[in-house]
Image (cartoon, rainbow, N blue to C red; front, side, top):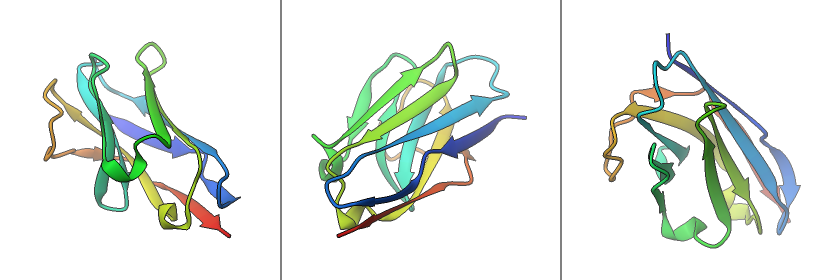
Amino acid sequence: QAQLMESGGGSVQTGGSLRLSCVASGFANNRYCMAWFRESTEIIHIGSDGSTFYTDSVKGRFTASRDNAENTLYLQMNNLKSSDTAMYYCAAAFGTNCTPPRYYNYRGQGTRVTVSS
């Protein structure tokens, strides 16, 4: 059974950084889209070919990367703002077309990020 497990959330001050990780297990291959959601909003995705999408609110501050050999998705979050406070979810969907809107049928349990001034 395919599963996703996030880690790396926590509490930081404004301007700080955090790195989230998401380990995927049970997927037969790496031909799937992986995404980060902030609450219910898709903020980033990476296709199996490395193509990326960033929503405007995180451009220049967040960087996603994907290690297909380790089945892991990362999210480096820099210059965090109070508005970034939320639950962050990793998601996956089979296929190579990751263009939003895209339905993701696998989601992790989420990890909380709290940014305080």
